[in-house]
Image: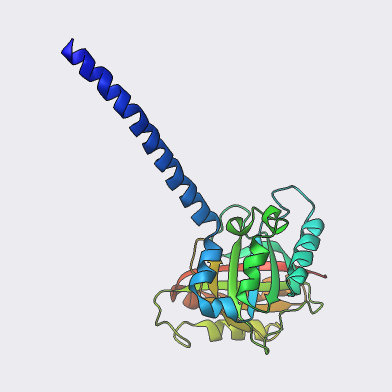
Length: 257
């Protein structure tokens, strides 16, 4: 009898305690989900320089959107949101082929390059209801930022294709010319590419901490592939790749905007 009374007592005490534990667990899960979803916003709050300075945004995303709308509608929506934040839309590209590296699924299928007066403008853009519907919103995209350099021209120039290479350093001390980028870029210029653009970038969303972006354009895909398949290019590419932790090279078709 005495044991039965104690058993009933412990059940009555444990029931609200278990309810409390479940409630705390739900709060922890919800907090984790919010931190994951709004990680770009937290990054801006913690980094005053990125928050206040003008920035280029390299916005890689799915072909089409999670809402299954056409690519042209997606681009129009993104342009409207960017312009609504006082930004400038530079170019849109759709992936032709992967030249180097590995990518997960379709996450790099298109790129939009735009600039904003400050990083905090991206905070508002990234939480805009229309932006959240494009390609899964901020956490469903690979977004890189770079300080605006007035000498860098990322606009559409009438060439059909644009090569973009992303590189992750092995160590923080890696610096040109030890990383082999310049000889690689020289091969592109020798095959008729536009003057290369180099930018130091930081990952805003995405799984890898890219540090450098290089880009140049060719008249068409044939010219680009002739360059990439040449023996000289492949030699310099192998040397450059060996000096970095990760690289990915993408060939995009520039779409007039």
